[in-house]
Image 1 (cartoon, helix red, strand yellow):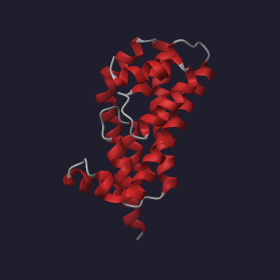
Image 2 (cartoon, rainbow, N blue to C red):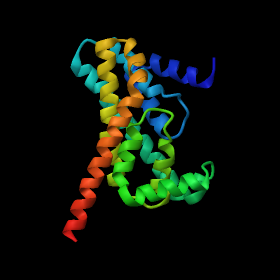
Image 3 (cartoon, rainbow, N blue to C red):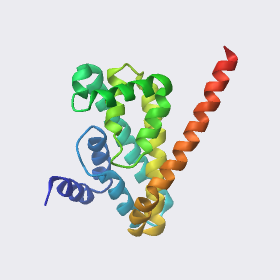
Image 4 (cartoon, one colour):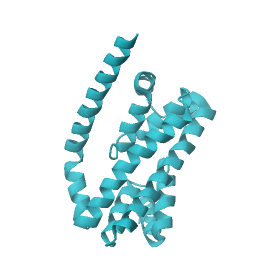
Length: 195
């Protein structure tokens, strides 16, 4: 059994607390192979009360937000050293996106399914001085949508919801990206008109 499988099994055995801790660790940079998404979906499949599923999704969201803030602080304190595993071109692209669209970039990054390089954007937000409150809010809202969707799929479709989510993730991500680009254009035009 590999490390990722071991972490997932341990978290499954720990229930809601395991989901919370796995979400913190995953977002703080510990590789879990998309563990929070899988675990949330599997745990939601075993529940029949909407309230319990919502609580699970919120625990995963809160844990992930805390983990992202840990990663942000690492980026803030260690500077460019934290980004050394990424190519200069990717770091520069992340810096440009963050400087132009800040919280929207974080929102999209945390909603995207693995293996999207979310950690690059969170570390870059710390390195390049994004304020922590917009980062935390963007992370919380994006993860709430992502984990809420996973919990819903788990509750209504069981383990088959995982296959359904994986099958439609690229399509849903594309639609979301188009919506975010459209919103960005509207915001940009309004900003230009007001100046």
